[in-house]
Picture 1 (cartoon, rainbow, N blue to C red):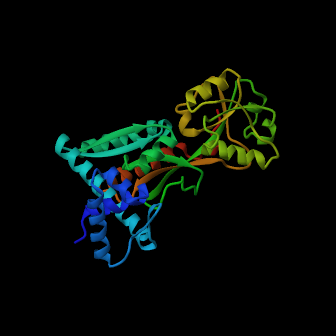
Picture 2 (tube, rainbow, N blue to C red; picture 1 turned 135 degrees about the vertical axis):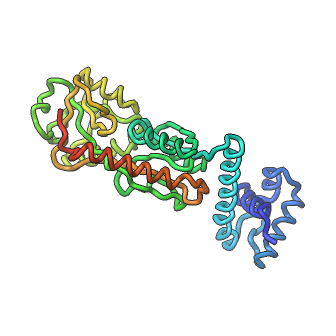
Amino acid sequence: MLELRHLYVLRAIAREGSLAGAARSLHHSQPTVTHHLATLERHFGTELVRRGPRGAQLTDTGSALLPHAEAVIERLRLAEREVRDLAEQGTRTLHVGAFPTAGALLLPPVVKALRAGGVNVSLTEGELPVLLEGLRARELHAALVFSQPGDRLDLDGDFDLHPLLQDPLLLALPPGHPCAELERVPLGALREEEWIGAADPADPCDRLLAWACARRGFEPAHSLRTDDYAMVLGFVAAGAGVAVVPRLALGAGRSDIEVRPLEGDVLVREISAAVLRTTAAPALHDFLRALTVQAQQIDERWGQPVDVAN
């Protein structure tokens, strides 16, 4: 009979590269690991691990079995966590991640609705790399993420992306900037400007800006970088540079900066909910439904977001 411990042994051998290493990682004796592997191979009627003088590696059949074994182990871990949450807190718990600009407008009504339905929400706040790591480690059931439209965000096939909102990138200018007199600003007019950018140059917003500038024959020169949009807008207000800022990050607006749409390419980042397909959390469907409703309401309030100007 196939048992969970047999799958743990297969995974440990794949990770450690030897039966001795697998035994150490599992706190078993090597004969115990050898016995479990032999039982697993008898069950499938084929060799799953090839031993050699330099260790052990999975055969093609073992490699085909490994992702299924990992999925079973992971599904059990998630189930254990959810059952413990229910037993300890008396309520279902949904582990959610969000980055600040989306969390501020999208999450509060959703969390309120879930709590009213008896669901506790555990929130992890962080920038995109932190959220993606939390998803990959299966520490989060779902996370609000952003990307260029169509970007998979380096997530594997165990995750689904549910698009929620197209968040336009608008140009933030210091007061009195000559381009503030324009309804729409051509990027070419900003080729000599200093830009305030994201801390990570691979940030989807910076990548979109770089792509649009390259189409016009120049590369934006970043004088400062930060992931805090309040700091970005503060630097712009002080005249330290210009920036493209997601509309979600503008909140109710500021009187000490000028905001204009860009002429030509419509630059947007896509706000999505990344969800682990194998999660057993029953509240996840309610979470996605409430998020979709909230995103639609924001979109309706924006109307035609790329036409907004101060």
